[in-house]
Image (cartoon, rainbow, N blue to C red; front, top):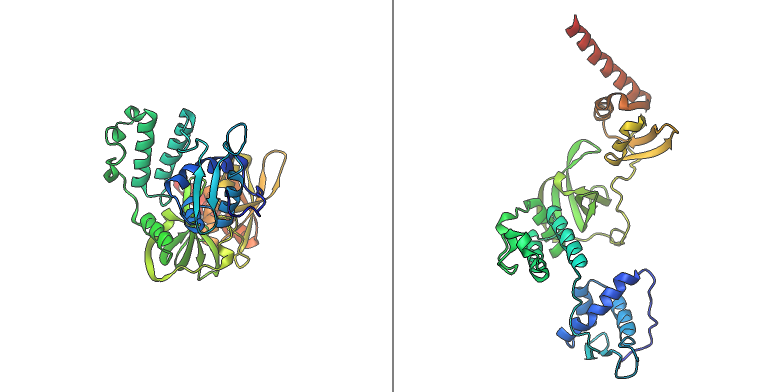
Length: 338
């Protein structure tokens, strides 16, 4: 029996489907790791110690129909040691259905294509093993016949930047990097304390505490021109470690000038690609949006690049710059025409 039953199972903040899958795999995990401590297990399973103990509180009340003493899963657990004394037949991980295996393979292949998220050779080995287990390896000759261990890892070329960022996150070290900021159209040197890697709209970003900006920033991996590991630990403040926060790609910077733009309906897709905030949407689909910018030159070039798709409304200096450049361009065409 459990050594501590004072906790009340808490489900708040945990999706039932996710929690169920986790609970069903705990028994075979602890059978394979008898006597492991709660701290060690929670680190391997990717949950907090409190969450793990709550899961165990609920797990030992589960079992086979009948739910008598001989039917329920039985555990001996404390934070110092966890051991399964009766498994109720749940002695190996759940088998993947064909649909589940396909979904997992698609997800793994997507991760291989996303720089920095995982070690690509490890992901490919996992893909090969799943394909072999599911009987689909024949459809993928590159992974057949090697059991997953000898998959052509040499065919996977991980960028040095992604590898360096991953190693810094793993080892808990700070980074110094040369970074190109698209919204500012400039290259800067930054020292950062890495927090995590995130995927946003198909791109990999490093979430880190930027020491120069004294705030959390997202750095797109393919815009990091150079990166080196510093000989000091990563030490982001607690506010940078809060889950679900600071994941905005573009946050307003009050120190920068702000453009007000009118965007035609057929060019509204631009809002998804640039750091714009929608102010109003007209009945005909025309959008008014604002956007901070670092240099007048860059902002004027952006507006002119969309032709009639984007019109600058403010500030006056931007409107004048766009009008002046457009007039000069038209005069060149007129000269050529004559």
